[in-house]
Image (cartoon, rainbow, N blue to C red; front, side, top):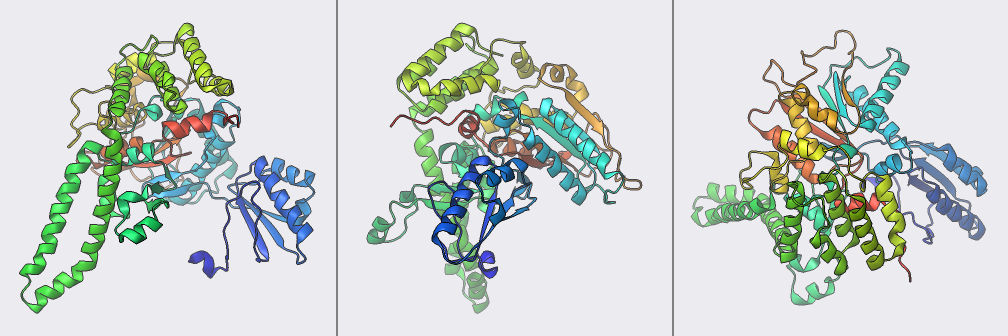
Length: 552
C-alpha cells in the first residue's frame, strides 16, 4: 500500500534470464554490491535500449554501500553512463522487537574461506549507527578473532569522529560480540523450540513461512481442490500474542499450552449463553472480533503443531536426536559413527550427513585422519565427486579438522553445557531449547551477567581467538550508572540492557535461550539480539559450501 502511494507500479525479483516487462518510466534496482548482479542489470539495460523506443531512467541503490568494483563492472559492460548510482545505508533489518539482522547470507564464508572481511566492516558500521542513535555503549565484551576485529574497527571509527559524537545518555549498557567460530556445535544441533522446529522443517525466511495447504483449508470441497497446490503463507512475529507465547517453548510444551488456550477460548464463547441483559450482550459483541481472531490464530498454530508432529513422531527423528545427544555428551565421538554410515548408504540429505559429521568433529575437538578420510570417501562415492569442493570448503571453514586441544570436553563440564533431566514444560535452564544441551554462546552471555567472565577465565583461554573486555569512554556528563567490567550486575535493581551480536549467524534456539534468561524473575539483564544472519544447520552449511550443480 505504501509503495503504491509513492507510484511504485510493479516489483520484480532480480534474476538471470528473467527480463523486466514494465511500462514504468523509472526502473530502480535495490541490490547488494555483488558482481553477478551487475551482469544481470547490464543485460536488462542493453536489452531495454535495443528494444524500446521511449527512453527509461535506470537507478541502482546499493545496500548498504556502493562498491567501486561493481561500478567498474558496469563500465566494462558499457552501461555505467545510462545508470544513476546511489547507496542506501540500511545495515540492520528489524526482524522483531528484540531481534535485528544484517541479512548477510555469506558472512561466515566470506570471512573464513575467501578472507573477505567486508561483512565485519558493515557490522562495525551498524554498531556505530546504533551508538549514534542510543548513545555510546560503555562496556564491550567479545570472544573470537572477528569479535576483536569488529571492536578495533569501532574504535578507529570513533577516533575519526574526533569528539563530534551525539551527546546522548546510553540506552544500551553492554555489547557482547560472539564470533560464530567459537561455537560451531549449536548451529548444527536440531532446534527443539516451536519456532526452531518450524525453521528446521519448513524454513523461515524474513519472518515468512510457507506451509503445505492441506492443514489450513476451511473452504468447501470444491474450493479446497482449486487451492490445493498453493502453499499457505504466514508471517511470524511477536505482534501475534499467541505466537509470542509459543515461539520459545520446547515443542513438548506446545501441545498442553494449545489445549489450555482452546479450553479458555471455548469458555469465553460460552458466555454468550449466559448473557441476559442488553449490557451483557453488548459486552460480548464488543469482544467478539478479538475472540474470533484468537480462534483463527489457535487453529493456525494447532495445524502447524500437527505438521511438526508428523515429523517429530517418526522413528528416524528420534534416531537423529539420539545420535546428536551422544555427540553432545562426548560418547563415541572418536570413531566412525554407524548412524552416519547408514544415512550415507540410504542417500539421505547430504546436509543432514554433513551436519552430523560437523557435530562429531566439534565435540571430539577434531577427527583422526582415517575417520575423516573414510567419511569423505563414502560421501564422494555415494553422492558424487561434485561434492569434492564442498568438502574442501568445510576444511577451510574449520568445520572438518584434525584433533586439537581438548576444548569441548573441558567447556562442557565447566559451563554445564549438557544437563540431565531437563524440565521441558517449565524449564529452569537454557538447555531446554535442545532438550539437554545449553548453547555455548548463550552460556557465555549468562556467565558474563553472573558471576562475570573472571570466574571462567580458564575456559575463555581454551576457546579460539582473543577475548575482548573493554570500557568505552562516554561523552562528558553522559554517565548513567556505575557498572563493572567483570560482571553486568549492578547495585541498582534496574535491568541492564545487553546487545548480543552474533558474527556469522544465529539460530532461533539461541534467541529463545536469551529471551528465557531475560524473563527470569531475578534476571539482571535484558537481552537484545543482532546477527549477520538468522540460520539453522542446513542454511548455515548452504552458505558455506560451493553450490553444487548436479549433472543433468
